[in-house]
Length: 262
Length: 352
Image 1 (cartoon, each protein chain N blue to C red):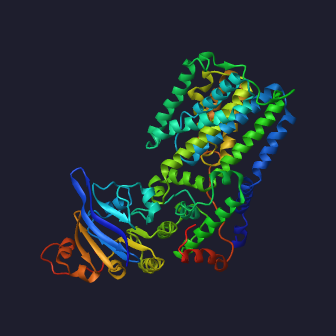
Image 2 (image 1 turned 120 degrees about the vertical axis):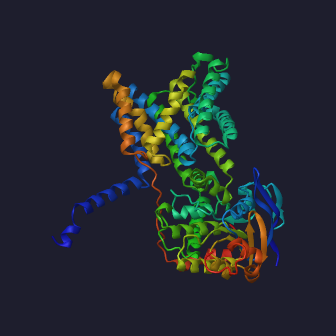
Image 3 (image 1 turned 90 degrees about the vertical axis):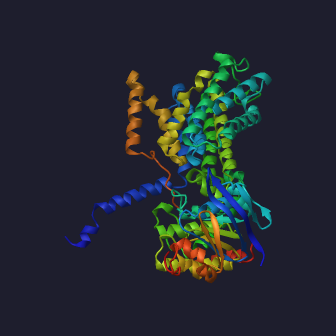
């Protein structure tokens, strides 16, 4: 399997605090990887470094052979990295469809002159945008209204729209930051099934998640972080048995397995 | 009282009336109705005074349409917008007088100069947000005015006068106020339509994404710097062309015309009308430019009444008289048949 994303010795420091200190992992094609760790371990900081929102102070990020370390977020997105945010970052005053269309911005097909004169090219392009937006909303099984401002929808529906917006980017890699947070049991089961369908599209997934049940069931490999450092990496079974991981989650001298909700 | 009678009580009728009204307001032919009204207006009153007021109002609508791109669509607070009008007016005035050309032929020069002005104000301010941006644009507006006040080529404090007509061939020239009014209305209508259409395009959506959440927009691959620069450039061009019309209308321009109050009034028109909604902005611009004329009978209390009315309007309609209400039709067709095209494209791994 070819490597999609290669992260090598990634580091970022804010003043004296090393939020991420030497993170190294690879993501292969059609692979689902989870990044776990206690709060403040540097998981989201690592995501922000990979997607260009923070400039790493050391290390490298390579996406399909292109070095994207320290590039602008928009350029990294163009190379093929899509993401969602830990706290929903939707365009609240815009309609559901417009939110999904944001993911399609890099699809060309119309210029501003086409828009001013409403050329046939413009109408074709707009129709294609709309059709594709509906496609991705169907893909995540979104059942709410699609022509209303997204602020009117429930939290679960907003989470679905955020994922379909990222999917509309049609990228090789999808970074999900706590996709299951705040979801109920059924919604989590749907998310599990959705992630597998996304993988089957040929998209690799890296997710940050605290729900261990979901992580263990879904991911092929797990990266465990604590205090900015990578303390373990391996299959769910390997990670579960790793003493350093147990210590990070449950403290020392505690014989317990990590399962259920951590 | 049975449930049945309860159901048919007034609220329902009020609801229907409201939906009829909103149906009318959202009607896509409303713009053409407004254009027809503007074209027919001189049949009601065509005194030199009223033509002058209406022409000025039309030019003001165009300014508001331009600022709506910058502030309403892209959310970049601009307190020096009138500078772009100054750049357009001075450029066309200077070029037409130097080469003895009708104003229409100065348009390429105006385009170049306004785009340059848009880049000059846009490029250094791309990293700034809200308050900071407002201060820099305020400074830009004042710098432009003071520069015009002190340069020889702009005629110093007395400005430029004797600016030629918009268009002259042979004996024909656009100089009668009525003809100029019609020419102005057609030009303004085009720019208003263009601005409204831009708002509903790929670029217009990108502006709104940037306004709503810059980081999320970046994460979707939208180059926020480029998108913001485009907003400045479009706003500058709209303002510049309004300046050409303005120069032609008054045949004289001076730095006194381009004071901060003017920028504030244009911004007021956009906010009062409803940021981001082109129809609302046109209404706002008409209110701001026509209301002081209508209140003329109040003589020295005119601006007091004007200010009070604005405050009342903003208290009762805090989002503007006619705010943008994002709404789209739900999908009507069955989903099975129409899915296949995208499905196939996705399966092939294509990106369009």
